[in-house]
Structures are given as C-alpha cells and as structure tokens.
Length: 265
Image (cartoon, rainbow, N blue to C red; front, side):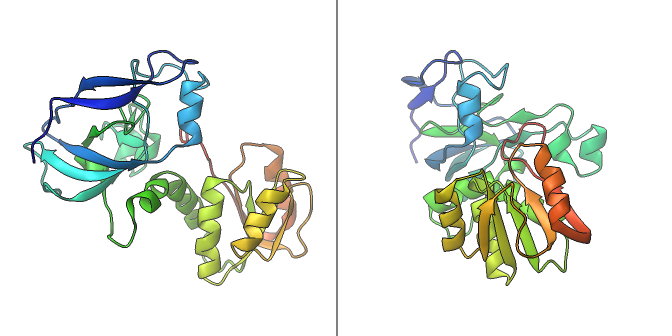
C-alpha cells in the first residue's frame, strides 16, 4: 500500500475554539509503534472536555479522538504482535512507563507517567494515526468498524466496572444511564441478570432507552428500586449517588464507582 506524505486531519489549535480541517504530515511510527489507516473514530464526552478547556494542558496543536478503528499499514522494527493488514483498535490509554509501582502491579490505568490518545498524543480524527503497539487491540470481524469504536472507551469503562461487581449478582443497579451504562446493561441482560436503571430526575428518554434494552425497572436516581440490589454500578460523577446506591443494596452488596471520563479513572 502506498502511504501518502500528507493527510487530512481535524486539528485543535487552541482550547475553546472549533476544530479546523488541515493538511498535516502523515505520522511516522516509532520502533514500537504501528501506523494505522483510520476507518472510524467515535466521539467521546472526554473529547468535548478537551476542546472546551475542562481538561487542561493538552498537547497543542492536537488531533483529538481516542476510539480508533483502522488497519495497520506500517510497523516499527520492534513490533511483533501485528502485521500489515491487521485490523486494530486504539483506546484512550496510549502509553505507560512500565516502571512505576502501578505498572509493576498490573494497574497501568493508574500509571504515574501515562500518555493519552487524543489528549497528550495525536488521535484518530485523521486519515492516519500512529500508536504504541502494546496498547492496541485486535478486533474480531464480528464487529463492524462503527460498532467496535465505542467499545474502545465506553465499552472498556463499563466492563471494568461491571467486572468489579463480582459474581452471584442477580439484581444489578446502574446509576447514570449514558454511554458506558447502555452497553453494559445489554451485557447484563444477556447474562440473565435483572437490571435496574437510575437516571437524572425526569429523564424520560434515558429511562425509556433502559427499558428497551431490557431493564426490568427504570426511574429517577432519587427513588428506591422496587427490589434490593445485589450490586450497583455508578457511572454519573455525582458523589451523593454513592449513599443512594448503598441504601438500595442488600447487606454485603457491592457498590462500584465507575467513570464516564477517563482521566484519573
């Protein structure tokens, strides 16, 4: 495949300013990186926080986007797990130092010196993107590009939180019915669990969506569910919901505070 020298990209030159379509050089992958021809890149709330200046000190100028799906078109000399033509996904966490106490314990998401795709590394709002190969995922052919992209952020956050709820959960509460929640609700329903969805007071569209996805009950986060929960997942960044979720769970139940935005998660 012939790789051009110049590509189109949507570039953030200053926070609180619109992105601009620009012609920029195609990135050259380092020894441990791959160059990806981008097929799809989903939009995350974190992207908006970066553009709006709510997350400070991004790389500028910056190509945002951290839910990247594409095809490997070039590999660095030290890349062994991917070959040209492989379909891969690139998530938010783009690099860790591998030496800090958290990395050594397998908690790379808490690394002391991380780099983030579309924030401190150029991301996927472009025709090509370079990424560290050890932070890319092989993607099954069962997912189309546009279906796989959201799984690289909301899907990962949701599943990590869901897994921490543990085993033997029959009644699962989900507080904050956004991107991560609506994905993991489907997983829980598929596994035969009863899902109880809690939304912002009066958010009828979110409650209707929860019911369509299989929730047995949907209501305001200020309400108590009709049944006590075995576990509750919190995706909304609202502190008092922890207390509400504790009241709604059985003795010995689990409450997990997840995160829709990735920084510090």
